[in-house]
Image (cartoon, rainbow, N blue to C red):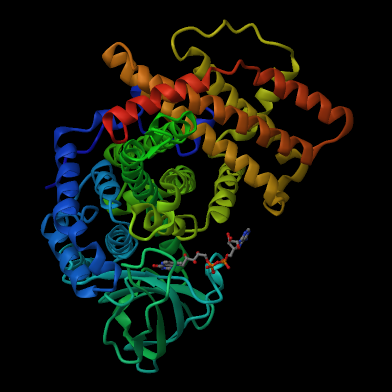
Length: 594
Ligand SMILES: Cc1cc2nc3c(=O)[nH]c(=O)nc-3n(C[C@H](O)[C@H](O)[C@H](O)COP(=O)(O)OP(=O)(O)OC[C@H]3O[C@@H](n4cnc5c(N)ncnc54)[C@H](O)[C@@H]3O)c2cc1C
């Protein structure tokens, strides 16, 4: 079921959204889905509804056989090898389609996590870095789930600090085997996997990657971890006790395992954003249903303003998250379609590396969005939100992991700023020149730009101002700390938050403008965008103030704060009325309303 690549989006440089303005028709949005992409979404949704959801209780109680059977069924529909090229037995789908699949899989978090570990981070290392022989040997069997896979980087003493891993690999004297010693921890699919993408240090020093098969001598899988959530997924430790791995199972090059690990994680983060948005939409639908059914003080609780505020805010944040995720998917597809020199798979990997900043931004924003959604879901359910017989309780527990794996949100925040500055210093992104230009512009006094016009003119101007606020604050922080910025984590974190809010706000804005241009108007999306931009700008201002106050003091700080205030000067819209509008639409639709 290969689909044509999505080409409506423009291929742009990763991170360049902070420096350049985009037109609505340059970004991909969910409204641009082709019929084929919609059908893929519908098929995945039906599979989840008809096959997976009836089995949730059994899977939650550890029925691994059933979990594997369902993975086989999903594979028959082409859902387990969406990102594997057709030449190797996969569906070879474009990234928008595989993002849609990830989003729909999130209907049941444990199944989604098992799906992601297998079809994403467990399969792509071989697709991207395998030799022709390795690809032919493994990829068709992975796409069909004859083999189930896992990604094995973390250790008990090395999670965020993954490169501190201690598992060791040495070539046996006869040169025919690698001998692996050590332990892995937290391996998703551990108990059901046949294949393990294992990172170990050759000679205790050179990080490398190996394809380990179940049953290889000296290799064993430990017991299930007792987790807070995603209890239907398998998470185990792995043990290597002089484990023998054939020499030809080295994946990529000795000492280049970190390249395999990090590029795979870029992809994992991008997909995780889609799983989070998908999970959030289902939780919102359950919340809307409950809010309309539950009566208090003689009315349905959905009639109370404070409940409507929550329902609207859930929908609005999901709208922004969804907008940034499909915008990113469209950019990736456009870059893939534009092609590059050399091997297509290598090009795919380079493309994901190019958008590493956006992938991290999606991961953090979407995982914090779904956590907001499920937290408010519990609140709307009241006491029943705290009861295991109601859906909020599991949704709340299941969502929490998303801020921890695929790089914690702290690590991803640091990566966003680290990558931006690295690209700037390498001359790949003219961040420093742009920061200087903004500082000069601000210091030269109020500009003569015309007053914003049109339904979202003020919001468009604010998104532009948000980019300038980032450049101004980043410029000040860069000058103060230079290459030591990474040591000032709170400053880097505040800058990362501005980056993410800017990307989310602009993605929602451009999407709404695109819909309005096509349909003549987009009242609901406009209401959501106005609320999101207004709140995002408050956060941007607060974060920029934090950065400036950490970098300067006295008159200098006061002058900088005055410039910032002038840059971000705005009148708040009536977010109470706008949220009510969104809440009413969501309640009428009884689901995510966009
Ligand atoms: C259910 C589950 C499934 C998982 N699946 C997999 C899998 O399939 N494969 C795999 O390889 N791993 C997997 N993991 C492991 C996961 O990726 C790690 O737990 C995660 O990377 C965090 O590592 P850690 O647990 O060692 O926490 P730590 O690294 O000890 O972090 C603890 C806290 O310190 C913070 N911190 C750490 N370093 C810094 C820093 N430099 N600056 C600021 N803050 C910092 C973290 O953000 C976090 O808040 C899984 C984990 C869980 C719980």
